[in-house]
Image (cartoon, rainbow, N blue to C red):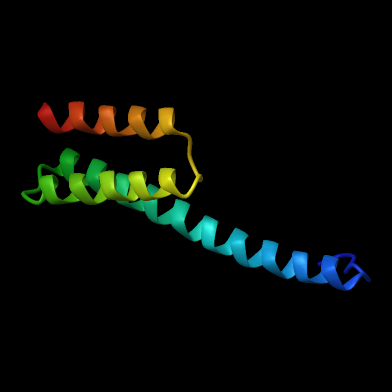
Length: 87
């Protein structure tokens, strides 16, 4: 941190923001990892593609419900994955 605030409520706000930022970053990372795992498995022709698809969709839904991604992005990502699964 560069400049720590002096006011007590602002100090608390900085701590809260850092905590939320860490949680949000972690959740987004989990979502991206799940999608990448699905893509990699689909390309490799693995047998557990269906399970990885469900996990990725779940991760996308969770990120969307927490407000980390917009509803349209969630729908678009799930649609693309479903189309890729069908191929």
